[in-house]
Length: 506
Length: 89
Image (cartoon, rainbow over the protein chains, first blue to last red):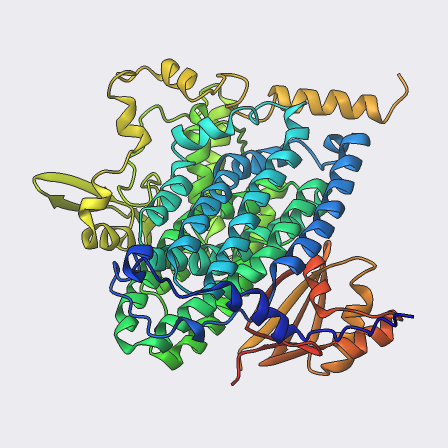
């Protein structure tokens, strides 16, 4: 009789070696240079790709197993959300503005990250990096799909969710996220990894997916919590990949240090500008708030980012150039951005509103040195104008920053009463910037950013020639339905009516 | 000293994991937030398979933690027995 000998179970390190390193082989009839043409394009020198290790030692078979488990949990909650009228369990429909920004600006970024990782997975020479990038490419695709799928339930009942892909490409506040990813994807493979693995994953996603998703739970939206936490568990791996790659570049050759430092400076600032969107979502758009943007920044920016830079100091890396300016902006960015959204509310595919007394008291408690002094008076003025029948709207178009593409609405780091505005003349043309950080990035690679497609200047060119209503049609923005004030909007009316039906038997 | 942290979803599957982390890391500080639990510790945090298995009453593969993990900070070092987060070297 055959006795089957029990197979010896492989240890995690052995299994990882067999399922990654053994996938690599030495090319025989093509040169490595032809196979990996972009490896030395950026000046980064790598001497031994085998030195790179995935600290999680995740292999493809384990990856499918655990991702499959996460998907089952996710879809159980999405089904429950659809079955039990989950769209009525949220605190109120103002919350949807945050979700609309998420879907219009962030989810398409996930898809862009997927394309980028599929590319750099092919362009890196090490089997360890190739496997990790492949998993990350799949993760990012999954994030885009699960986010679109989860939010499609809201699209059945509310406006503003219907054309996020067009919105992403054509509206002014989404082009900040779009330009971030376009910039990353048109860079070399190592820079892409710093842009996404370091800046987006380490600096941005913790601030977006952790306190904001915890806030989604507080506001009764379990569908969003689930896609957010499910995505962020992948981000934990991605952050580890990003950090590992920075260390790898720095350990391989001392000549890599200045290149890596320059990218850290650049991508920290670019990421920080994208966070402007997140700061308004957290401070203004969650009807029930978990923590302020400032508190989230203290934990995930100062403490967490600070720990990262203290660690990288060992390699000679210093905190990013814009770090101090960022710290000074924290008390202002959400207020300045929300005021911008409010005054240009005819050009947004979501609703805005004047904060209530209760909201303003909360903001003044969270921002004791700035809110009552600089921002409460403005909201009071806007409210008074509204009550007197002359609602405050700005029909002038914002000047956009040539680098981050945000409207130039931010103030000088050391004086919140003066608008920050920088100019650079390049080949006879004047370019405008919102900050020293963005100006410095432009001046380092002007030929890249002069080509940027900016929504506001485009409005005056063919075929729109300044026709605002034609622009709305083109951006798939339905005037009076998707935009404008929340009070009396169709979203508010629908929510109140349906919620009334759901809690009564009439 | 720099803090490391790990955040897990607040659910039945993570309860025994969080208890194990608490038992193995006396310096760890636990904060419970809506839908999530954040655990931070000065410099180093060790998650042991054996303690989780004792709490859970079944075999546990440390990579199962990916299912309920939200985020972390610090260098990651993983083998069959422990998952360590650390800033000190």
